[in-house]
Image (cartoon, rainbow, N blue to C red; front, side):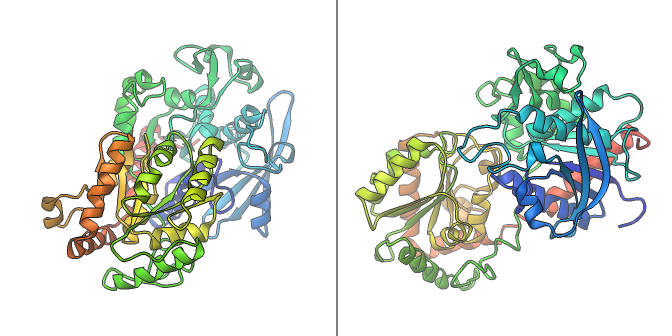
Length: 493
């Protein structure tokens, strides 16, 4: 790292494995590491949840922050992630050291003071990017991730004196961080900020809207999603604002951790394989069937895998409606995930109705997730919208062609099968245009027909396994964006 390295503060509510509820946690771990490899001096700011302190051995105090009225006293600690990336921990035990997850209690209910909890995170980030920072290290760019960090853009907008440039990355526009308007005063923002061209959103104060209004740049996690959210259908009420800000909006496709997701070395797999030794993949299929008490059907009966949140967005209701028809193809269906109770209960009932054909595991199991990616023949992703998606990239790397609704990052990462795309060496999976049961079933039947053409299927698998979904391409695009913003902003605060 040279003395001229651009300095970036990466502000996030999640960072795997310390705190993770979805893809944001993976991004917050992998992208900073890739940026450091490019010479970017990036440091991560994360709330001090119990899991964070359980995982770090030594954290030294950098500073004490007293923010808001009445004052909230917090400590800023420093340690390092396992990748070597410097980690700043915002330590406020009453707000962050609680049983449960980053956003919800153990019963799955949102913390009632989430506005204050993530307002503090945003304010701390803004202080570090302004002349009032207590640290000698001053970021030139503040990179805010999703609504819990987006309010930092508003604080920086209203800060006096020089300040860092700022970016907000939208991982899922549906999660907006909307709170009672009284939070504006509680969080120390001026009354003028609560306006139609500011924080106000349908009578609520919106953290995410603050980021979209005040950020110097807006990114999403795939190019197609950046386009989709400017439409009324996918814009979650913010499409007109995003249309107005299209000149600073871009989509940068997420990557995956190619070391953690590698069938040749994956420690969770009982049998390793490569693209030139795909016959060993059958051994992982048998291991998956044994673990979940599925029948060892003939080779021409495919096993369909799902690892997903069981929500309407992810098309869990489509899986419920299609499951028995999928089993009757014949095929086997393995589902791992958790989410809305009605979907969990309906899928459990289907598994009980068709033992040996359908297996459902409610919850999350990292080892089982890896085994499904390896042991399944095909991977289903019927999401109604998908900002980026990671599992379709994992699946291709594991020689498990995905079957997905053509939306967001799924469109950007899967090349639909046809004789022409296969002959060109591009085909990697199967896409369907409408999020309906009929379209899902038609796509699966199309895939099963190719599955029974062994040579074509192997070519499809090998095409996917040859794709490079590593983080380096995304890191280069972010590095270029940081450099442009820092140059435009001028001297650091």
